[in-house]
Length: 429
Image 1 (cartoon, rainbow, N blue to C red):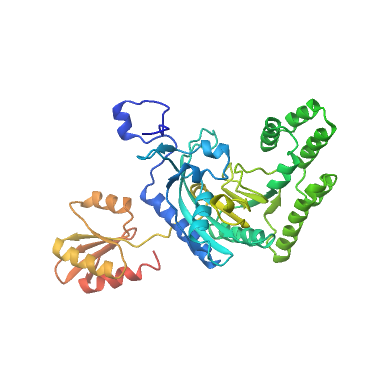
Image 2: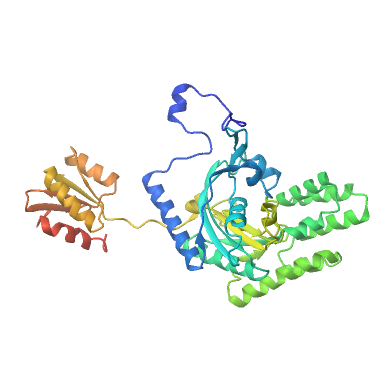
């Protein structure tokens, strides 16, 4: 039986239920599907060029496995149900934990570093006003067994290349450090720590100042002052200066400085900025974290970071790892990438001849369909709606006429010439 009813918000009339889909889900039309497939193809090509290989994990797994390291917020967002044997299973809400499980159990003996990527749907019960998607396509990678700074430099450089190839306009990457903020807030009680992190996420300096005034212990006051000062800097040097009196934070500033130096030396620092107060809502992060921003979308379209303790949760030795994921649906909304127009033929006339012409065209890699019953204006409307570029009219066993949509007049050719005539249009259509 279900532990959570997937969409319990209302009980629509029967007619409404069969014509609508639940909130937060969507259908894709042929053109939308083609655009998504082009993004997936370009994503795969890029990751393979960088030496990564694709993996796949189940959409549904045990809830105890999927929730490893992701934190309460993400765990509570999962769709959960009870299996026939009483086990609680769930739809995955993100991909890193299942890939870490698979790597620990199936690739544990492989030489490191392990470079793998994935593309698949994730599901979340969400009520956020800025993002009500309950199913999204996620594409990401994991670099497992790479030390700092080499892992960070490779992943950030690859991400920049990927965003360029996906034609995401004016994309920038904001970089922070999860351990710096965690250690800075460590001495506070759990409730206060959650409140501080929430206000940092909201960048609410006024609320942080009020919290500062409520503090009584000098050390707590000092740390809240540091958090407020960090909100106003994007400079690693300034951040290092602000945190200089807290010796356990020094190593984190040094890590970020080293990574920044590498990026500059490689000529890829452009578009990568530093936000020391950046927070990601996954608990498994242990070091550098980052988010991808583009002006055309009001929220991050992806992000990632280092997670050096996650593999242990699946019984593997402690393994350094870093990765990222992109929300491919948001990328699709932002991208300037458009599918090339394909040559497609619609064939009229005697079905026996039409099917023979269709077979010849498909043998040359040209999509072709035989028309049934459309004629005149209906025929042109049908052809335009479904993206056909040519109409072929079978006149006899030997002869046919061809019309290129958007051009005037029919051209008579022998049936033998039709495939070559349409093939030549591939380059100029």
